Amino acid sequence: MIKIAVAKGDGIGPEIMDATLSIFKAAGVPLEYQLVDMGKWVFDQGHPTGMTPEAKETIEKLGILFKGPMETPKGKGVKSINVTARKTWNTYANKRTFQTLHGVDTVFSKAGIPIDITVVRENIEDTYGGIEHMLTHDVALSRRFITRPGSMQVIKYAFEMARQKGARRITCGHKANIMKITDGLFLECFYEVARQYPELQADDVIVDDLCMKMVTRPDLFDVVVLTNLQGDIVSDLCAGLVGGLGFAPSANVGDHISIFEAVHGTAPDITGKNVANPTALLLSGIGMLRHLGLLESAANIENALLYTLEQGVHTGDFGDKSKPSVSTTEFAQAIISNLGQVPHHNPKPMLSDQPASCTVMTLEENPMLVSEETEDEKIVGVDMFIESDGQPDYIAAKCQRHGGVKFNLITISNRGTQVWPTGSKFTNLINQYRVRFESINLEGLNQQDVIGLYVSLSGDFKICSLELLNMWGDKKAYSLAQGQ
Ligand code: NAI
Image (cartoon, rainbow, N blue to C red):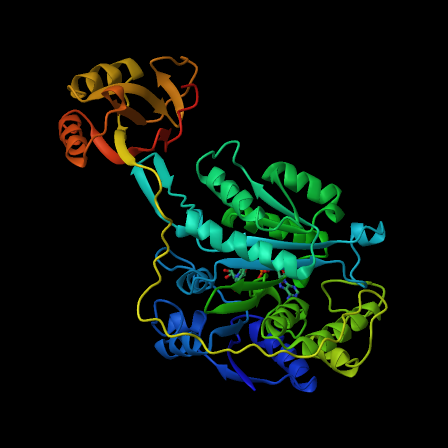
């Protein structure tokens, strides 16, 4: 028996989790469940993370969490328990599988276009750090972190998963044409890893084009890997292609701890009515069984589910409306009575179980992920973000006086658009400028030089924020302003 942690969740969570576990039980799945306290009601009891210390300890000991959806209490200061769990335990790869299901009508199933797309979304970084500040009353800033080690983790996972799945194509979705440094880094990592997988066709598509192509020719895609926010949007788009959120399973995979859950939320509008569709959670559970090496149980249950859908059995959210819908428990019961049946479409091979060892390593300290530095690094300037409602020429005249013998004033931009030394009077201004100083001849500076400039400049302006300008070797590690 493999022991896993189970959190039933809020809203429809307990209804769909009970339905799923009843199917597992009938199929004789060799799992033992330890229920843990997580969710809105745990927040309400005064635990600020939405889970009890005992729940945290159990999940870290067992390494696998099977969870129902959880509500994030409204109001500032409370972070989503779902996001916190994924980030805290470094489940860096969010894998979501979207397949044509016979019995679930969509425009593509009706047109005979098969869909089998796996989206791997980076799960830790990007704007999901939630590092946000108001720089002035008018200006909000969000910091978007994309890191080399974080990108490498998720991209390596995606390639390895694609190889094991027998995929033919792996695509990186990105916006590196605009976010040249952040998405550029993700894309660079993608092609670096691709070199180790010559059997896979690796390519990249700009994310807006990707969305357009996915809704016109979804059959062309196989495995798609993206950064966090873009991956979030693209995976919901894919859920729509195969029939909606009721059919979208999700695995949050890390090196030590993995979390399996449906993509959808707590569905407060249908809670307690015994009408929710348990398919997405069941598919997530089937993914978990495969992750644990319980391949026979996974195939047995998936075949029964596919067979049941082919029979036209459906909950109220999908299927043939001329046939009466069944309740959550009746749907689960139908699957149970179909255990042992083989569907006509996409039957899953009954591979024998290869149970994975589930001992979670205990960690003495936090893993530190650092890439090897190969090039010399030097500070060659600073971007000062200042508050002012003055015109660009006025700002430039003031700033030039502070450059001293070490700094040249290079450019001034407003919302990323250059307004000095050249610009247009038609550019609307906001009361917050980015003023770029570089060292004379890009000579190396030290932090004290920057602090000296900061102190001097602060005599004239409120400095909201600053960013050092670095060079690695002869490469500038910062972007140019638009128009520069
Ligand atoms: P939702 O996914 O709960 O509901 C959206 C719509 O889809 C509703 O009409 C709902 O009835 C329907 N729906 C969802 N799951 C269904 C199912 N299994 N069967 C039939 N119909 C289903 O999204 P919403 O309303 O935006 O969020 C509600 C709560 O869920 C929020 O507190 C949110 O924070 C939380 N949430 C939690 C997630 C998680 O635990 N991973 C993910 C998304 C939202």
